[in-house]
Image (cartoon, rainbow, N blue to C red):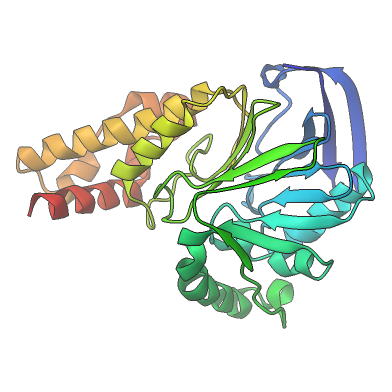
Length: 310
């Protein structure tokens, strides 16, 4: 991996440390928001998750004449990202790509479209934007009026079915929808010339999986297909930067969780008992959180597998 440039963000302060390389150097900690230049003109913003979860990770790619942003985040974080982008380039932001419809990835769209950008997402996410997306935004207007106030919901206006390529000869970004994973409309940003993939929540690094909109069987297939690409760097939707091995960890979690839940169903174990008994040491080694604490994921998989067996 090439030497990278790290930018530590603390309010409006910006510190640049040059000559550091690799993510094994301990740059990233949950209480910090950092920006790293992964390759020439390719930036990754790792967003703080502790003590307060403030949004998703994001990225931006600087083309010859414009910028593409990966994930809009919440409105207040979008403003922070725009400020960070302006520290790296004065080129106009032409596109904001929403990896999926969830508010922490898409509610800040208007901050970019107000600057003239076009919001992009996969075709399979369109209905989710129009239903769950707007409903979630309206809820946030009630619960976070200081941030959402009178903002108008802005969903994507450009949709693609399977793949959309943006290539100007200096940068190439392939926006790809592999299938139903975290949501039915998940898509990733793949930069083949750099071996970098921005995965959204199709692959996260840590205890950040939410399965409420997922199909975990299909999700495993999506991860399998993603791993066939020559990935060097994973920029996940949440958590620390990693390499292609992160896809294996994410896949292993769902494979082993489904196996354990199926074994419990076959043995006649109730869901309540399963939530008390289930053990997956690998998951805690990876995320620092006991698998039993992610009750919503256990419940979701249990529901998937019991519905399938009917």
